[in-house]
Length: 169
Image (cartoon, rainbow, N blue to C red; front, side, top):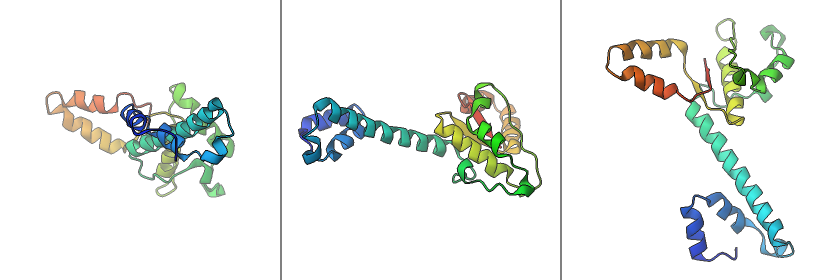
């Protein structure tokens, strides 16, 4: 039980500081009373920021509409037949190629894991607070061709992808 009254709780919710409210309420009275106010506040803000960051990354991953949302660079199998290089993937995982406006192209046979790898990189970009979007190139081309026939649809398609720093397929 936190020492916050109902009005303070309402104001925190109204301001969108729900994570901070939950962090303050979660503090154990017996443990936190021995701490100074600024230490308790720092702990609450750290916990609230962690929850905020987790929610933000989760939202970025959901909005990316990844084909394989569970794909993760940390759990890739480095089977020799795939020809994956750990050093190269670690470098790609830093997402520096996005900041430098470079493209990454995966080549391989059907079923070799190109889409999975793309989704893993996109998820890593989301963890780095970079907006991503998963779309197959044939689907994007088809949407663009269909947009040519309708007035202003081209602008709508462009608006959908504006602000996305990494698109994968």
